Amino acid sequence: MRFLVILALCFFSSASFAIDAYFKHNVFQKNESEPYVETIILFDGTSLSYGESEGVFQAQIELTYAFRKDGKIVEWSKTLVSGPVTNDTVNEIRDFLDIQRFALPYGDYVLTLTMVDVNSPGDTNSSVINIDVVEPKTTAYFSDIMLVQSYSKTEKKNLFTRGNVDIVPRVS
Image (cartoon, rainbow, N blue to C red; front, side, top):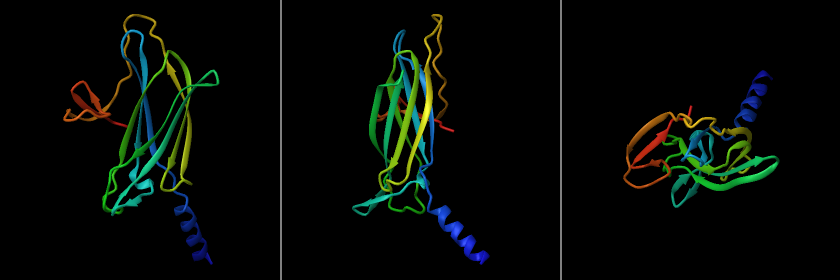
């Protein structure tokens, strides 16, 4: 009897997978009057479902951002984020990043972040995060600090490009 209870617990705990992702945001100042929020999400590849197409596998996440101020949506986006293509969903699963930038005026925002695993729509995460875009009180201003995982010279412009350098942020 004890064996059946343990087996049932193992079955139900393994059936309740969810998207495992790490979120970070930074507030940067483009120039004197143009702040923006950069969002970074690191998706744990082992927590996602993989769809097959033409003999290869790929994870896909539908990602929705909704920034609210005073109860009204002031900025939003809905994108499809695709993970790296793989031939082996057991040994070659990799984590991947998504970066998005939102120009937001100074103020306090409530971000609703929703993630849906396209290959397993029952796996959905939704979070509410407070984000403050603080107006500098003096002429000297420091943007948020971004920790860096790696950097290299830009070969082709992409989401990680800043100037002529690709900077991959560290999310932990």
